[in-house]
Each structure stands twice: as C-alpha cells, then as structure tokens.
Length: 391
Picture 1 (tube, rainbow, N blue to C red):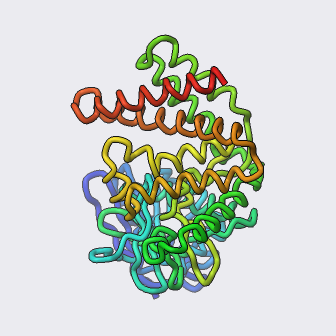
Picture 2 (picture 1 turned 30 degrees about the horizontal axis):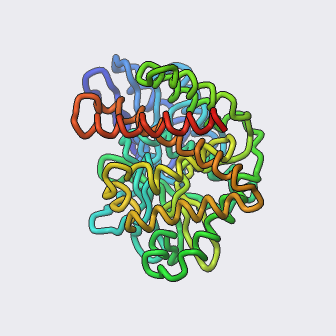
C-alpha cells in the first residue's frame, strides 16, 4: 500500500511517497507519478521519501525512467534502510539522493577535540560527534570518511564514523569511542606522565609517516605550502620571499602519509590504544610539513598571545612549548643535532609563513594586533631563512 501526493511551489514540484513500492503496485505507482508530472509544469522535480518504507527493483526502474525524462530529479529525506538500497544499486551515483538525518544537540556537551574544520563533542561515554563549521558540509563529510577508511586500510588506527546526523543548521559525523580521552585531557589529568603520553603520540606519528600512499586523490602538502610562500613574496623584503619559495620548493616530493593537523586533541586513547580522529586534513609530504603544523599548534599561534594556544589545548603555554620540544626530540632520535636544528628551522619557517599569510588574508594589515603578528612572523621567517641559507 502506498500513498502518493504532489505539491507545486513556485517552479518546484515535490512528490511525497508514503509506504512501499514493490512488484505488486509498481504499475499503479508509475501511472500516478506520470499523471502528477504531466499535469504540472516545473523546473525542479523532488521526491520526498521520508515515509517510503521499501523500494524493490521494480520501483527502482520507475525512478530510473522518471530521471531519464526529468534531469532535475532528486530524492530527499531518504531513510537509512532505503538509502542503503539506492547506494548498493548505484542510484546514488546517478542522481542526487539525500539521506534523512537524525537530529542531535551538542548543547552542554564537552568539546574534546578541535580542528580547522570543526569541533568534536563528547555526547555520552560511548559516543562522540564531530560538528563541521561549514553548514554545507556533506561533501566534506563524505571525503573525510573516505580518507579515514583509506588510512584504516593502510594500518593506521583510525576512528571511522558510522553515521551522519543533523546538528542545528549543519551536520556532524558520529563515532563510537567508548570512554576514549584525548591526549590533551590525559596530560591535563596526569601531568607527571607527560613524557609517556608524548612518547605514545610520537610513536603513532612515526607510524603515520612510514606509510606510503599511492592514491593520487590525497593532496600534496608541499603544493599547498609553496602556494603560501608565493603569496608572501610581495610582503617580504630583500629577496626573502623568493628565498622562502625556493627553500620550500627544494623540499623533496614525498607520497608518505601525514595527518595534517596532528596535535594532542586529535589523538585519543581508548582501552590502551591510540586512535586518530579528524581525518579531513590527511595529505602526503615530507615530515617537515607535519612538524610545521605541530609547531603552530603548540607554539606559533601563541607567539603574541599565549591564550590562543592555552584556550585551544587547555594547557599552559609553558607546557605546550615543552610538548613541542619533547616531540621534536623524540621524533629526531637517531639524527644529529645539526640535522634536528635544520628540521626545526624549516618547520618554524613554514609555520610562521602559514600564520603570516593567514593573518594577511583575514585583514591583519588593517588592525594593530594583526600588524604586530605579521611583523613578528616576518622577523621569524627572515631569521630562519638566514640560518638555513648560511648553514
């Protein structure tokens, strides 16, 4: 039994389906759909499948014929069970099909992680949700899920989302992480064991960086960083802009995996195992690009105002500086002091270049605080270039 109703608003015709479509009623369903379509003129055709309980292969053929005659057709509010049918049969690749999402509220929930594109909330002891800043984030969520799966298949311990939900006007990915805690929380609660946590944190980082990615869809961090440098050429005096571009361009190309936003709020501990979250920044490149991101998270973003780092990580600036220095020391085990200092200088150089460009793009040249940060970054960039070109 099925109920079919059509409603036209402006140039959009919406058809609501309620019930089941199978071989016993497929012919009648098709006739009703054709009648509604032929009786209306429209530019966009939408099928609202919120109450559609089931669709068989006979029903799918009806949808396919409808799509061929109406290129604007899209299906919305599809339940999880019906969406799985569309996905398994490839219909989600033929036409826009939007899943009906459960609604969640994160009001009063603890923020346990945070990255460039969203925040991670603890909902209950078993569940966390990453809420994306961009309200039109469904393509970003799909991309992050694919990247997380690729990392997982390559042996990286990764939390993979099992559902997508609506959070306010935006969307979130749901993860099952029973009693998991971020490394930031662990260090806050157990500061005497900070070196142990940093050691585990660096062990995971080395595992990530030892993993080679052959997939060309994973972006290269070097290409991004070269772009940052080129944007700064006009703002750096005495040829320093050209030198900055050259130093970054001379960093070898690499297909080794990087997380891209590797800090202690994006690494979790669950039942003694370290897990990565916030996988939308996965990229490839030499470790120096990852270290530059880490430097910014622990030191760079607090260079002028330490509270930027303290509020973000929930630890004192002295402690985050220690985490950076200890992380670099452990990561560089087996390297000479000269090699470690060169790697550090390059990481700082790239990190400050990123901050300077970011500040300029956000109107920093027009504000006193912004200009102060830009001038500071400029001095650090010049100092590190001098060190790297004279050593």
